[in-house]
Image (cartoon, helix red, strand yellow):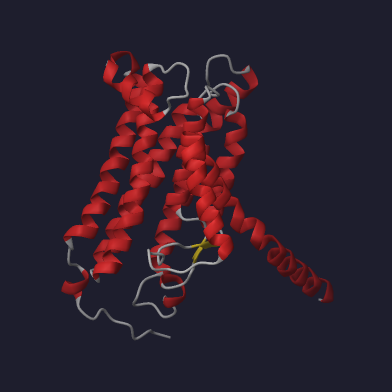
Length: 302
């Protein structure tokens, strides 16, 4: 059956509104800068100036020693987190000002594919998915043969997640309201996944754990990639503003999150992002078990 939804005004939907798209451009800029910094951290660490190290020390004051390459990676992490905040603001500004358009949505997804697809992949590829000095030979051989594939799987899932989101929220497709105006995302949002990857890398560099936990991060990275393309409902905060009311437990969680940032500083981001990532699957687990048991029952009846 052919649908009857047609664009109402092509020129209206292709307009470039200055304020929201400026935040989207900022998202793209920080993602591009993060990629450059990752490359410099890998290949041009010896040419780093003192300014790189000083800025990195401001990011992780608790770290004992910061090498030139670590300084580049820390700045790349900071850029990915800055992209996350720009992405959180562009849609909110567009909705508050009533300046939403299909151009803005497509531009946002293209920027996200760079900032939350390529940039975190390059960060983890150079830090985790390549053989490191002092690593066991078996682990080094495994990473040498499969590291590029793991990075590609993550980037593929992030891109698919962004493309699917654009389809689900397209105003000219019937049923889009459920996803555009609902309180949940279908699958883990790519910005949250990138924020988790960046914050875990930040903790790893701050505690100087590069040679200890890379093998543990690989299954976690693949799990995050799978969550992005799953149908698990993740809470959406896009409609929350200063006038929004919340439940008592939600308010307590907000205060705890603020205290974590103040007390734990750079380590708090990994805790917050990981709590968000695993909260939804744990909450969804009983429902998933019921669905699986129902399907198994149907199969036995046949």
